[in-house]
Image (cartoon, rainbow, N blue to C red; front, side):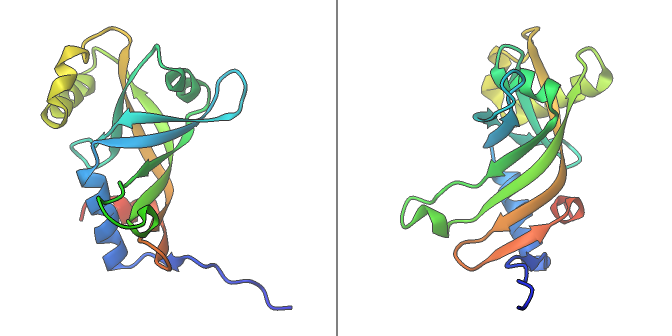
Length: 164
C-alpha cells in the first residue's frame, strides 16, 4: 500500500507574501491555549499585532483565563485571517501559527518600547495598557499552516513568517 503524501505544499515565495500580509494586517486573532486547571483546550479572541521586529505580539490582562493558561502552558496557537464580506468563509486565506508565549516584564526597557509601538497599532489601548494586570506576550512562531482557500495550503516554518 502506498504511503500517503503530505497534502500541504512546501512554502514558496507566494505563500510567504500571503502569510506576511495576513500577519501585518491583523489587529485581532484567535488564541488557542491549554487551560491551566482543566488541561483542556480553550480559545479566546485577542488584540494582535507585530512587534518592531515582526514577531507576533498581544497585550493580555492577568484577569483573563488565557493569561493563566499561557503562564502554565506557554505553547499555544494563533489564527489570523478574516472572511471577506462575500462568499464562503472557507475560501478566504487564514494562517494558523503554533507559538511559544513569552511574557515581557513590566518596567523593562523592552516593555516601554513595546508599549509605544502597541499604542501606534491600537490607540484605544491607551485606556488600559498601564493597568498593573496587563502584560505583553510575544508569541514566537514554532511552525505554521497557511490555508489560502480550497486546495491551497502550505506548511511553513518560523523563517517563512519573518519580514523580508
